Length: 166
Image 1 (cartoon, rainbow, N blue to C red):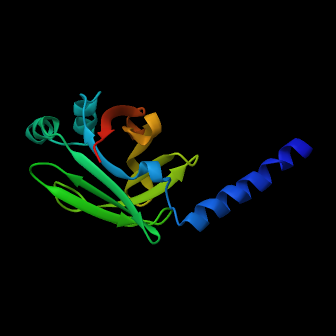
Image 2 (cartoon, helix red, strand yellow; image 1 turned 90 degrees about the vertical axis):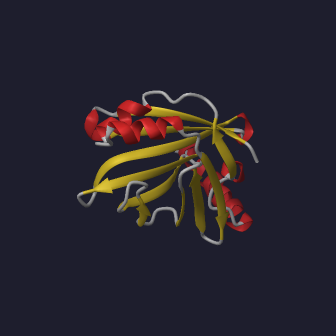
């Protein structure tokens, strides 16, 4: 019983530190990241989502940049390529609509998982998860890997690898 209760003060303290510092996400998640390595299984991932061959080839040929910032109580994510740019602002644990690069909007929700992963869910048909992306960081925040998962396709998974450039 004593062992189980020891984590409570640590949890409260970590919440107070994060709240007092004004951070929504850890500061190492902030910055500008550029795709630096080939993606794993990304073509199959896009095909499973119903993206046509031409648009998949176009996406595979681009080198996107992801810029992540936080202010007030929102996270701001800007994704840029030579052909388009998109910015979305969101609060953790609250639904929001995100613009789809191919048109339309995607109901979404972002969560901080285990205090060190940023996961964004994309929904279809109400509460059914179409896919999610999970950002993990290594090398002190200088590398960001994005795992993309389609739960309804046997957890089909793709990976994209980014390095911090700023």
